[in-house]
Image 1 (cartoon, rainbow, N blue to C red):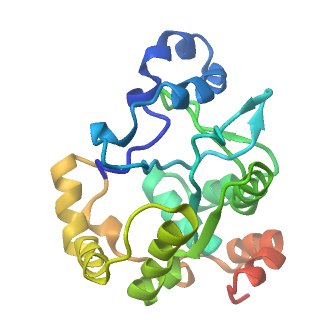
Image 2 (cartoon, helix red, strand yellow):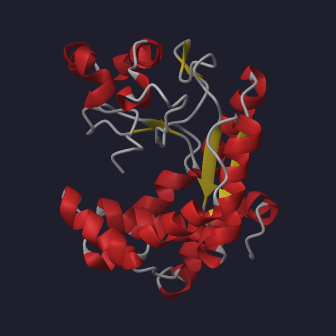
Length: 239
């Protein structure tokens, strides 16, 4: 987690905090400057890349581009069954399932205004498409992997991601032993210990998978499937 910092945090936007506090949506003005002034590779001159995480949409907002294509080597998009997403989001944010469904099915823009450095998110499918379309437009590669596939066959799909990094992005070395160690390091027990070490708010129960089939009502399931039927079929999710 330390090696994959979240982009929209004080680490990269702290110098603009006073301006952002005046008006939260001013953060978009600093998307590009933050990348251009970023100290890459955690000070390790032997590395030629940096991993950052975000839930932000890609593309422009108020004429401000989110990703500097001259700095972007590529992107990895992990997509998950939206029925499971609403369960996970509701649990993490401590909101109702219906509120969670409203959030991921909106046709508008979700802004995390309560965050010091807010994110701007689209709905479940449009957020994915924003990265696909902008990556194609600006010429940097991307890969999409289903969360469920990573769980079911971790080695196969994690290897796919590493192959993307080595072959398409041009960074790192494909090493099967390291891949196996990475998979082991993200096991349930290891994630619980990491959570306790870094003081994240998730409890042990958070990391236990909860099946949407056991939680969503028939009406809630239909709301999601009606909104994203075509897109869910595209990604191989059963309706």
